[in-house]
Each structure stands twice: as structure tokens, then as C-alpha cells.
Length: 296
Image 1 (tube, one colour):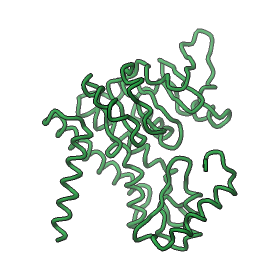
Image 2 (cartoon, rainbow, N blue to C red; image 1 turned 90 degrees about the horizontal axis):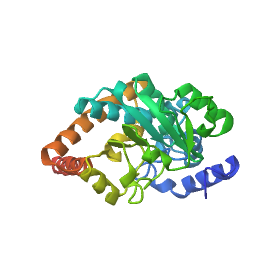
Image 3 (cartoon, rainbow, N blue to C red; image 1 turned 90 degrees about the vertical axis):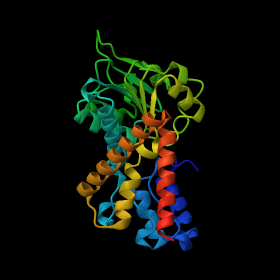
């Protein structure tokens, strides 16, 4: 089943059939949430079929939800980038960015990065890559995407340095950092050697393979791992599930938690001379074990 190409009716039937099938597990053992090609409408369908309001997060606002369409994941990604830049003494306004994936995460990452003064030079979607070394504008990219279905249809004027590239071409561009915001394993042993960016921020889950991550680390390329960088959506889901949070309060919580976590991970990685993912996993393990001991 491919939710991206399914009809609305087929998608609804699949979502609600699944919801009814796992109803005995909800919400004590299973809580649904949005992800790729799944949004607030799908969560509404899930809850209506399940019959329990807390069986899903990311619901529409009118159902008491905090829809991920607010941009919580993309916002968290940008909080992570800002903290990493501060940690290494870099000014966001001097950084150039490539965004791989232009769905919920990628579009909001672009929006918030632009607001902080970073220059987004490349955006990729399933049709290809559009690159402008002089910088793209969020409004133009969004307008073109909505009207034509792809960012590669941005106009190229006479004398412009803009160009269109094939899918995957974004990874070889001379940008400061790349935000992955689509699928797993897009950076792998086949393209890791060609990466020119000095920072990879995983807005998508497991977008860098373990082998590629190790090679990039050996080359001095920072990979800010998914479990820290893209936690904004999960934090939003927690806030909704717990209750008492609106958009503003949720975004404050996202910034607070991700900023603290990124700083903690980068300090541990530098001190122990290990990859940030190794540091993040060690910190997470200690927290989980510590919580378990407290509950005994």
C-alpha cells in the first residue's frame, strides 16, 4: 500500500481498518502519529475508527490536537542546527544549506532557517534538485511547488547561476550543511565520499547508513543524529498526549529540550572523541537505566 498515490477513500479505509484491528492496544500500548504521507486528516480517521481520543497524536486542532502541520519537526531541526552552529562558533548567516526532501520537514526547515538568516541554496524533491548558489527564497520555492508539483520548475533567468540537477545531486554541492528530510539511507557508501558539506543534520530517520556515518566522521564531517535533531515532532506528540499545551507552549518546549540535548551530545562527543550518535546513545541509555532504577 502506497499512501502517496492512494485515493483518499482507499487511504481512509486502510487507516481505519488498521485502527480497528489494534483498538485493544490503544492507547496503553500503542499511540499513532503522523509520518511520511500521513497527516492530521489521517490521525482524525484513526481516532474516529478507534473510538479513543488518545489513540493518536498529531490530530487536528479542533479535536484538541497539535497537528504536525504546525511544523514541529522542522522547527526542531532548525533549533538543532542553531545550537550546533553556536557550539562551533559559527554564524548561521554565514552558512549555506541544502535541503534534501521538500515535504513537511523540509519546507518548515527552509522557512525557519530563512527567518534566522541562513542561505538555503538547494532544495530537492522526488523530481530532482534545484540549485542557486546565490540563495533561494522560501516563498518562491513554495509557490512553485504548489503550482507545478516540483521545486525543479523554479525559473532560470538569463545570466542566472541557477541549475537543475538529477535526484541525488544535492549531496555533491558545495554547501556548508545538508538537511536530510525524506527517506532512510540516502547518504551511503556510494555517495559519502563526494559530500562537500561539513555538517549533515538528520531531519529524516536513519538517513545516513552506519558505514557512511563512520567514513564521514573520519573525514571530520559532523552528522547530527536523528534521535536528537528531528525530535521536534515526537516532543509535539508528547505535549498533545499529556495535554495542556498549545502551539506556542509546545514550540518553547521543543526549543528547550533540543537545545539542551544537542549541547549535551556535542560536549560528550568532543570530550570522548566519538561520533555524536555514539554520544547520544550513551546518554539515552544512562537516562533510561537511571529512570528504571528510580522506579524500583
